Structure formats: structure tokens, C-alpha cells
Image (cartoon, rainbow, N blue to C red):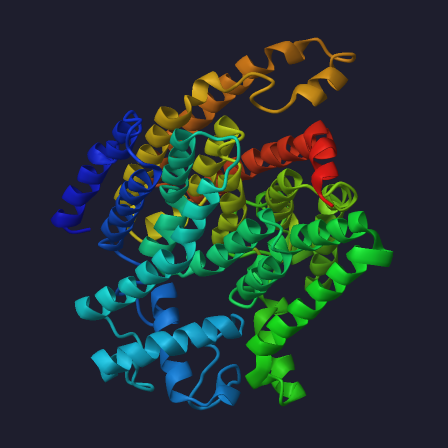
Length: 534
């Protein structure tokens, strides 16, 4: 990282509190505060973008930055029918396109603009591994614009739609969500476009909260057709909408609504896949690219159960790929089944948001072919409940960013990681008085505590235990982050720190999975609020 970006990072850290100061001025209008919040969020994003990126100067494969550039090269220079096929002009072993059609269309749009600026950036074959400062500026700008147009407006409107919430809390929620370091570091540091699919999913949640079910369905279809990993969120969307139809009655309004939603989904997919629908082999090849079974159970040091167990049992060596697939499917299905049943029987917006968290976390922990960056699919739904359960939500978001530390270190993003983590922690503490929100009621465990009181006596001290665990967790993350960046591991254990990070993060995620499922299954608010769905 150059000196200018270092200075910029620390300026962001020391002056990000400006919106918090403005919150003390009651006369200031909400939209003025939101504007300041957005400007700060954009400043942080652009500052992080001054850092290095995935695979910078590391031939022959480089990294995700080159993958996105290569997709622009392929989509602009080759006909659509060749985008997903291995040809002499499209070597699928070199960052072959493996995302759904909307990603390909987005790559084509970026390539069209790149061609106008500098044709060398996307020249077929000769542009492979292209790196320059002007090109980096262009690529960073494409992520910045996508974030600004899709994700950030959804966050602002979602926070403004929070009911029974003061302006201060709405602005505080927007500030903390937009400062979440995980998404910023991966999209604007490492280099990806996660804000597009996550933004579409967030638009879906927003529109469903206004009972605009068809628009919500369209938005989620766009998310799913941009990144197939949005399947993590598919069951909550499906169960919530199906539950609403059941409540309306499948012999009346419910059947009409179900028919409309089904038609909307089919039409949305048909439009996205239209160029590939002319040939069955085309569609099958796209699907094969989207769901490659041969890549294995997990990649790198991901903080899920399979990678953590592999420290003790080499699952990939003991179990065949087909058995791995069936095992992961069975465990994932069983882990999310109670939540989906509860949401279908008692559909409520609150239950829907909690189900997004729980189901995505189940997918991350137990499903097949998981990447470390997939934790973002859990983190954004957690951001949606930051206003309701600030202590646990903040804790989870810190751990989710920490779980990606090995990847961020590889990309040279340690400074950006440290500053954004501290800024986010400070923003949450200042906005929500986090350490005062640890009572059983604040943690939303009152129904569970009443159930448990008959069997155990220590649950009364649970808030104190949680605070102690949080401090221990933060200390452990800080020490491991420092050691990962500064200490050389023993020669016999070269992966000591990455494995430690993934294993400790996995233990955290198992704890959070149990916590969120307890809230969902014992939540009396869902039973009351679902009566409003008619």
C-alpha cells in the first residue's frame, strides 16, 4: 500500500465519527444525515480501493481481479454461444466463466465501456494478465458504481423503512451496515462484485417488507441470476412467500398470489436466460459451469465444519466426491429444516430476516463447495437485524471479517483490515451502546430463558457470560491477526495460522447458528406478528 493510502486510511478512522456527532443535532433532517453517512461510506470504499488486489503481479493465474477482466475480454470478443464452452479462444481452465448470465451481461457492459477507453484492456488473448494504474482505476470504478447504484440505496431505504425506530437509530443502522468491513474489503480490496447480488437480494427483502411480493420476487431472481450462491437465501424467500399464500387460503387469494409469484419467477428467469434457451446443450453447459461437482467439498481454509474436521480427519481422502456431496446435502437440509418449517407455518417479516441468517449460515457451515467469501451471504442478513440485536450482530460481523483474514493477508490488505475493523467496532459501540444491550431481553432470549429456568439455574448469569465470551473472542481475534501478520509459522506447520483462524471462526459460527435457531424456534413475536400477514 502506498503512503497516500496509509494516510487516507488513518484519516478515515479518526474522522469517521462525524456522522455520530451530527446525530446529536435534533434539528438536522434525516436525509441530510443519510447523505453524510453515504459520503463517508463512499470515502471508506475508495480509500480501501487504493490498496492492492487479488493476484496483483502474480502470474500465471493472477487472481479474482484478472478473472473479472478476463470475463470482460471473453464476453466482448466472443459470441454468446461460446461464453461457457471450452474453445481455442476461451480456455475454461484459465478463469472460465462460471457465474450465471447476469454476471456475463454485466461483464459485457463493463467491456463495452473499457473498449471506448482503451481497447488493449480487453483485446482477445493479448490482454491476458493486463495490469496498469489506469486499468486498476477503471476496474475499481466499476465496483464503486455498482455499489453506489444497487447496494447502498437498498441499505438506506431499508434503514429508513424500520418501524418504531428513531431517526438516530435509522441513521446509526445505515452507518454501521455501510461500514461493515467484510464486504468493503472483499469488493473494493480483494476485488469482486458481491454488492450487486447482495444488493438485489436486499431490494427483495425491502419490497417484501412493503408487501410488494412480485417486485420482491423479481429482485431475488436477479440476485440468483447474478450469483448462484444466492441459493443460500432461496429457501427463506420461498418459505416466506409460500407461508403468506397459505395464510390467505389456497382456495382463494392465496392461490391467486401463488400463481402470480410463480409466473413472475418463470418470466424473470426466462428473460435472463433467453439467449441460452435456444439450445438444450447450451443450457446444460451453463449449469455444469455453475455447479462444478469435481472441485471438492471446500476450497482453501474456509471456516466451515468440513474444513475444520479435515484437521483431524482428511475427509477428501477418506470419502468419495459423490458421498461428500450426499453427506453435505443431508446435513445442510437437516440443519435448516426446523427454521423453514417455522417460517412456512408462521410467516412474518421478522422471522423471514432471522431465517435468512440461519439458513445462509447452515449452507456456509455444512454445504458443498464453500468459499471463505461466502460468509458475506450470512453477514448481510445479519446487518438487517443489527438494529434489533446489536450486540450479537456486531460480534458476528467482526468474526465474519476475521474468518477471511488469510485471504486478506494474501492480498496485502492487513492495514485496511485493521482500520476498517476498528472503525466498525467503534461505530457500533458509539451508535448502539453495545455493552448495555446484553440482558436476556436485549439478546431476545426471554422465551427460551423461561423454558430453561425449570432445568438450569445458571442461565440468570448468561448476559455476564456472553460479555466475557465477547471480550475473550475479540482478544483472541486480535492476537491471531497480529501473529498471522508478523510471526513466521514453524516449518512443520506452515498452515498453523490459517487453520487456527478457520477453526476458531467455525466454533464461533456454530455458536451463532445455535443462538439464531433458538431465537427463531422460541420466538413468540413471530407468532403474534404473523397474524398481521393476510
